[in-house]
Image (cartoon, rainbow, N blue to C red; front, side):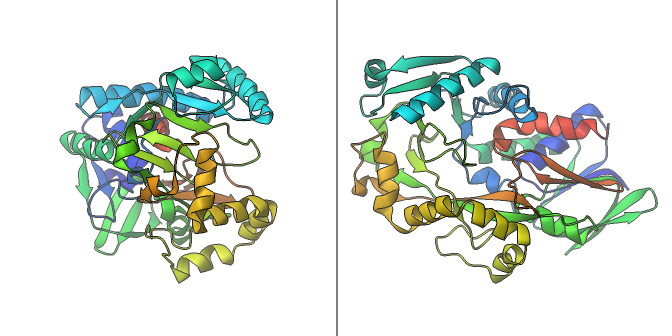
Length: 393
């Protein structure tokens, strides 16, 4: 009998396991992951940014967790000799509408106690000669890291604290028993007093098979990136972001220097036809049927049809994607964009078609299902783990 069983070895599951062992040393904890290594999905397929929380409503849970997560992530990396850098980020306005949004974003940043500096066209050109804009916000504390490496180190920390990790094992369901749970997998079952499911892209399926009311569905959104050819990787020194459109749930295509010295462009946000198929053109009939049979999906599509068509165009035509980048980096050429791995975001959608932008938890007996851990969950993972652990210890 384990005290806790954590299902899912992504960064949120690992951080939760760390927090439980930190809160109560000697706890008998089991973590089960279906892949052969931790962090194989959303954790290992993102842009590697250590966010500051500039976009989130002041006082909101997302803002608080991100601010805490930024500092905790840097501390964790420093403690465990994980390479990270703090190049900073420029959010660049390229027209009058974006300048007005930039002013609102600056107000929001200050309310969240994030150090920012407004700069004009001339200083922007001095800082980043390849970038064109009417003005920008400089966020000096934004960093970069390899979250896959962070996840692997978290796994080591869990094991060293006495946690048991089982890899290559897919959990099918969590059954309620008298005062405990039974975690059933393709390779056996285990008993635990409490279970926490951090199943990411499979969160809705595991919840439904475990008896949780399926009032939401996970819809996969592909984030497609390009790598800038090596000869042009020094074109910028900082992350370059567009000013986000508040009517859209994603931040837009940005330039990001990576911790390995490369430079990426992306991501877009296009409907995925496979939850875990990262290659372009990946199709999974069961995954398509899952969202196509859900009324909330069609309500979402009808509300965001124009934006969705634009994202599909960018996905299908490299030149269209390039034009989004050239808006703020006009010297980029078609030949500068090379193939790069995609990411897939698990977006929870409710029955009414609302995209879930905050945390979504569902409790069933002695099991807690983390059904939506919104971006920037990687940055915020350590305080998210502690928040979850607080419900049990």
